[in-house]
Image (cartoon, rainbow, N blue to C red; front, side, top):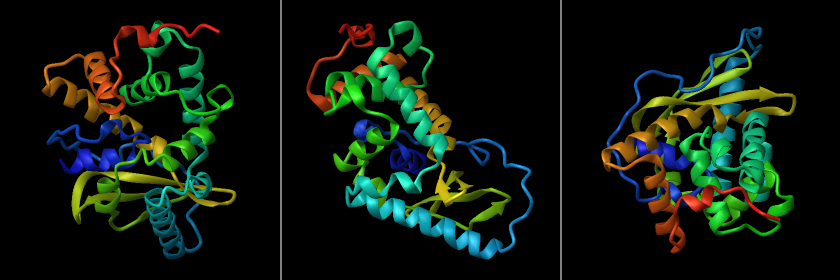
Length: 232
C-alpha cells in the first residue's frame, strides 16, 4: 500500500485513486542511472534546494495551482507529457499499445473527457490542467515526503516516504540551467509496474483494468473503441 500511495502522488491523474495494491518494488533508484557530472561545489545547498523543490511541488499541486508547477518539473517530464497528448490526439490502437499503462490511462481519459483546448494542448498544458482540475490524489499528497537527499553530480535521489515509512524506492531530481527540478518521468516505470501488478491481482487484463477505472472516474462506459484513431 505504501508504494501505491507513492505512485498515486506521482501520477498526473486521479485514475489511480482507490486502486489498491500491497506491492513494493525492490531496488532504487527507480529511474535512470546517475550522470557522470563533476561533483557539486556545495552538496548541502543542493540537498536543501531539492527538498525545497519537492515541498513546493507538493504544496502547489495540493492547492491546485497548476501555473506554478511547470518550472519545478524536469524537461524530460514535460517532453513525456507532450508525447502523451500527441498520442491522445492522433494515435491508433497499434501505436497506443506500445505505451505504458499510465500513459494509456491518461489517453483513455482524455478521449472520454476531452480537456478544453485539447487540439492545441501540449505537455505543459496537460500538467497545468491536471493540477488545476485536482487530478492528483489529495490523500497521497498529504502523506508523501522524502528522506535524506543524495546528490550525485546533476542528479539527486531521495527515498519515498509514505506516512514517514520508506516505500521501497527513490524519487529523482535533475539539475537544469535554472536550478533543480523534480524528475517525475524517472518514476513512470514504477507506476507502470505497480499498475500492471494491480491489474493482475484483480484478474484483469491491462485494458480491462484501464476501461473499468476510466468508467469509474468519468461515469462513461469505455471499451476498446477508445483506442481507435480519432477522426477529424
